Structure formats: structure tokens, C-alpha cells
Figure 1: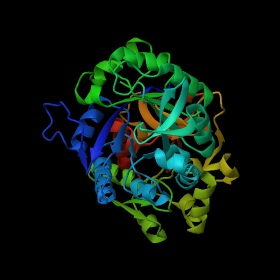
Figure 2 (figure 1 turned 90 degrees about the vertical axis):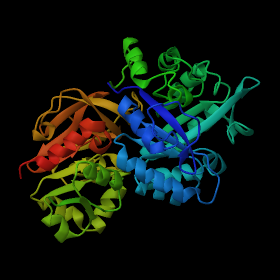
Figure 3 (figure 1 turned 90 degrees about the horizontal axis):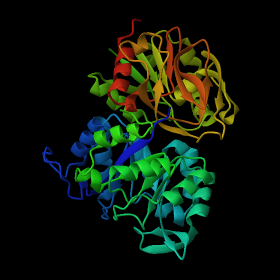
Figure 4 (figure 1 turned 135 degrees about the vertical axis):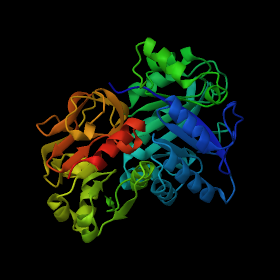
Length: 251
Length: 195
């Protein structure tokens, strides 16, 4: 059986891990490569690196990081943040990234999804969608949830699938940071609507939340950051618990 | 040992090169006939769309060379699919090494299959020391149905061939270079195969 995936997300700024991490055994808490290796050894199925730096130097630093990660880690990883052209993607893939995640650039220029899928294949095109509820409607937001768009989550999800996205990373801004669980109703609706894998993001606080998002939210993968970084949940323990709930995982 | 990764413009070849390096070997990227023919091991990668990749292969003349190679050759993912008779993707005529036609998963399952799935019914020295039902990383929308040349099987909608072998030609639908330590062991096995 195809397993459900557990994906730690690392925020990167100027080549360094940003959010404080609570790994006592880490020599350099800011080194994304070392952290990535630990997650990989603990049984993470994939990794996501989200580049949040804004300087001109960013691209070069990110490429160096991608090379280091790809040479060290033997599981797949996705790179996101500020990717806006075919050329950006080409450089990242050439240096060892397996997938790229695009967000605002896809909203601003939806043709980018088609271009990337055609050139590199759908399998490496993840479209990240941030959305929150406004008067009962799920509205797509940009800039980390600050700027609302005209787009409805479900319409946009359908469109990105049709344009060739291989996967959707859905973050509920209503749930993100709350540690109250994932947006399972919206996730389940998404999963029924499109026929590409859905990664659930935003709201993970305990192990039961992961169980719920796979069973009720019908998610194919679940992404989280702080619960892993602060060791509130260990990936091994999480996977064992999922297995005990009859959810297929790779152990 | 001289290892060549065929570089015809398709595929995430850097990951394979890094994986070989983690095993303590060097691999060169090449599309040069002489260099490929002289290699001890040839790896034929590929991601993306089949007809586009096949066109690049034909443009470089490598479609003629690959079926004539005598050393162990490993096709990975789309590389394996292009070694089959044909693919439903873009109605592509393949290299005809494996006697099977590649077809698409139906919408009964999510397409692409993306993630970790098990391999079983393992045959061939490629899987020496590998347990049945180990997890491998797969990303694909098209697959080779089960056939006499299958040396591994995976279940997604149907039981299909997740690895193939004919003589010195091997193919894996999964990515050994991205499948953790077990994947690396399979790559190591490939390098250790008897010529």
C-alpha cells in the first residue's frame, strides 16, 4: 500500500534555519543540513525547505543549500519560497531538488504551472495554497495570509490540477499556529475534488491531529514545523501511533 | 569502476550522482557514445514526459546506442519506461528492450502515485540482501503491467512491475537514489553485479 507521508518543514533565511529549534543533540541548530539529516534518520518521508529570505543574495545561497542537502540526504525534498520563473526551477532541480513549491507566483501567473509541468513534469510541481475562511468561503491569500485574493480555494485547486500541478500543499491560515488540529473538512473536500495528492498543513499540535487529518481529512501527507522542531512530537512515536490506528506508514 | 549517467537533458541526474558518491564511487555525466560504451556501469535516468524525453534521446542518437550496450544498464523511473516497447504517454515508441507496454493509472486512484510503497516478489541479484516489502519512493502516473520480465512488484490500483530485467538491462520504477538506506543498497547491488 502507498503510505501516508510525514513531512517536516524547515524555514530558511540566508541559508540558515530560522525558527528556534530544540534539539539538544544538534551541534548547530541553525544548520538546515544537519537538521534535515536528523529528520531523515528519524523516519521523515520527505522534507520541505521554505526560503523566506528576501535579499538578492538569496538565490545563490539557496542553490548552495540545495546542493548540500541533496548530497547528504537520501529522501526526497521540496524547495519553496520566491520561485517565480522556469529558470529559477531549472537551477534548483539541476542542483538536486526533487520538487519545487510555488505559491504567489502561480496566482499572479497561472501559466507558470503549465510551463513547469511541461518542461519538468508534473511530479516536481507542488502548488502551495494558503487560504482562510471569510464569511464561510475559503479564500486564497498571499503573503503568508495577509493579502486576500479573489480566488476561492476549491476553484483554484481544480484549476492548478488542470494546469498540471502534481500535488497541492494546502495551509489553512485559520488553523496555522493554533495547534488545534488541521482543517479537515476543507481538506476532505479538496481530496474528493481533485485527483492529485493533498498535503495538509497548519494546526498540528498533537498526534491525534495527524490521525484525524489522515482519516477525516483524507490527506495524503501531513506537514508540520514547530511540533517537530521543538520535539513535542517525535516522528518515530508519531508513525507508530499512526500504524496503531491502521494508517499505512513507512516504519 | 567507471560509472556513466546518461545525460540527455531529462531527469534529476544530480541526485543519482550524489547517491553514487555516498557509496564511495564517482559517476560522470555523459552523452558521448565512446564514453558510454567504455563504462563498466551505465545509469539511464529520466523524469518528465515520455515523448519529450524520447525525442531528446533520438536527437542525440542514444536510442540506437542503448539497446546495444553489453555492460549492466539501469534505467530509473522514466528511464525504465523508455526501455519498454511503448508508452501510452504521448504515444511514445520506446527502446523495445523490455517486452511490455507502459500504460496509465485510472482515476480510481490518485495520479500520480506519489510517495513510499512496498516492493515484493523480488527476483534477481539487484535485490540481494533486500527484504520483501521494503518501502521505495515512487512518483509516476504511468506503469509497466506485471509481465515475465518483472523482478519486483508493487500494488497501486493493480499489481504492476516496479522493476524489470532482461539480460544486462535493469529498470526500476522507484527511485533508489531517493529511497533511504535500502534504496542505496539496491544501487550498491547494481554496482556489484557480475558483468
